[in-house]
Image 1 (cartoon, rainbow, N blue to C red):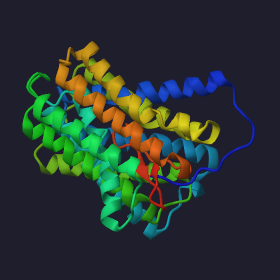
Image 2: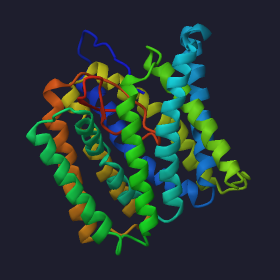
Image 3: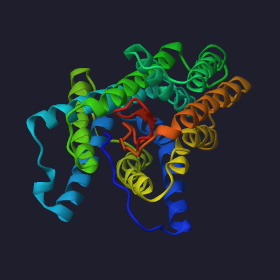
Image 4: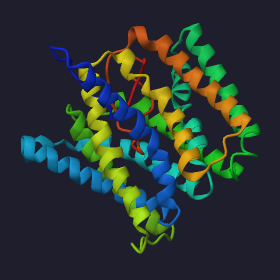
Length: 332
């Protein structure tokens, strides 16, 4: 959900900026691991529904304390816009990621496949008549080459990664990209935090209903490990890291903040290997390196025209998105 965040005067301390940046790097990079742990026991859709509904209530409560209930007001058109974001990002984006990880998608490779979202956004821009520069297009072609390596060569040794799960992750990434592309064109509240509250509430409600309709039952009879992972996703993935990201956009150079987009997948692969012993094969390393390089290339090519914008990742994981003028933007 991206809305413009005004810049502020005064430079914060280097240590504070780096602390916030590390929070975004590690927390958003670790959300894929958190999802994988949750869905080992809990149903994917309803557990993510609980995550987003709880995070929306928590953030809404904080905003109410700081600005009163009036701060949460929105029009019918803004509510529809927030609901559309809830559908594309938390439901079709994060919800499908959770289903794919439940089907066996390794968390690290999932993060690498999701990382192609900014490249898909460029495809949407071209379809609309925009003409990105040669460096941007080169980055997109490079990214899809890395994607082919991951899907065609990397699955065999990536720890039982079924083709269906891989395709579902790519579908989730495409939905996330489409939602991010449409976001600046939707009627949304001026306050990015208010937009975030309603996107998470609508998304959480839709995920919960979809889960129950599909036959899921969230019994609550899960291990402490599952509950801790879910609490981590709620508090740190959906609230703390997003707040740190918004603060960084207001306090640090956008060129520095945007580095999260190609650091998060690296963190995800490392944590998946360290915590869950997910296989990291030569194909995964090669394909992942190509994808990360492609994302860095596209972000670098788009940077000169960029203005800071914000969006909440469906899983708490950020992805570059487009601004109203078609430029690539980071999300939170």
